[in-house]
Length: 315
Image (cartoon, rainbow, N blue to C red):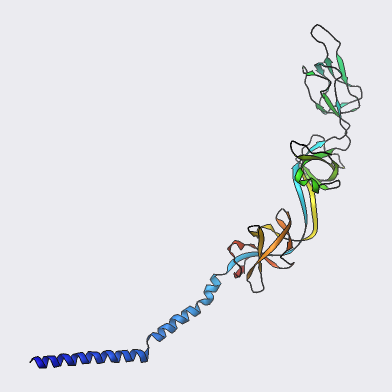
């Protein structure tokens, strides 16, 4: 009986081995995974275009062109009468009366005020302070009861010639300002009027405390609207370039000190381009090197770009 059982087990084992061998041969010949691999490969290849489209970066662009650039200093000024005259007292004493006020027109030898030169134990007659010339009172610097000396400026008289706008120019800009430099001024009193002018006076020295130079600007004012004492906002032009190759400043990016932009080629690919910047005015910058007129420049969206990025221009 034992021999019969051993023979049965041997036959069963041979049968299982034969089935395994046949199955292995079938796998080699039929290769059922080949169609699966082809299907996966086809899906991968078919998805290449959608992935490329998904990588497109939306940007806005502008064409590189030419502009007239005018650099300027923006500052505030004071309208002054350059023909004004200071009036000093002839004696030391106390002011007993003021006979005029700012804006009043006075004639030559008109009494502007009186001073009592009396001292303790000594009584003197009041001394009149008179206008040396006819003019308009621009300033009254003391009040009744004030003590003054011959070194004190009591009044300022204006002959009211052509007033000037006086501005202070920082030391770093004085090399760009000269006689004839153009300027524009606006006044709160005349918000719709732009007054044009030019530099007619340069101070010979700088103020050592502020490191600024006084500059006088004559305005074109045919209707005599500008009055001494007014406080204008001034643009003083320092440099101008006609037909400069210029771009919008937001298009410029930096790596350290090197400026660069992205230019779009004919295939819609962004190319990184190093540029040299010249004069910068408001939202525009002059390009000295790196760009040519007519090229297409990325102005928005460039922070998402690298050299070779595919872009999609949007309105």
